[in-house]
Image (cartoon, rainbow, N blue to C red):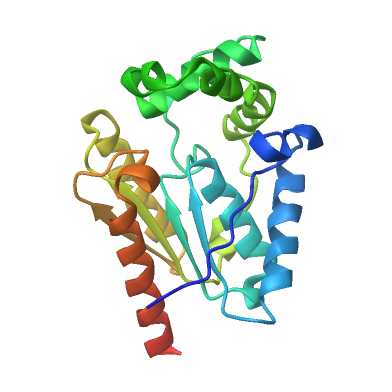
Length: 216
């Protein structure tokens, strides 16, 4: 099974850095506009990784008739289940925060292998990253998942022992919050699964699409 893949740099990042950082609602507006463009042509599947998964959930809640289903990988959802160990106070240095975030998510070795221009490019994403991290840390939920009607899969990996307990507990809570959500644990996957476990994620999307078509 083959899919057309549409991806973009969110405002404030990489190729869209000139557009400047924006708040959460504007990110959802952008994704919803892209969904509206594609929906008349073909079934729409949203895949969101990390903070992108939070935006994907919000877009699915806003326009449920325009998409087939959502696959969400390790989106941070502290409003469902808090994760205190990530409550380190943010500094006012966006460049340092961008480097610190990359090292935490991708590990120090990955950062060290980047060329200096590549490192500088990541640091320049810092202002947008700080806005997104502040959104994730809000105590109030940006949406109500109990209202979700689009079939959704929340996936996580068991490759990071420090995070596994949290994601298992979060997944157990998500299926109680919304009957539209199911969960799956991917063996040996870590937070950077979109890079290191791309085949497993592609298989998951294919399986979920086949199941959705069969039940339609």
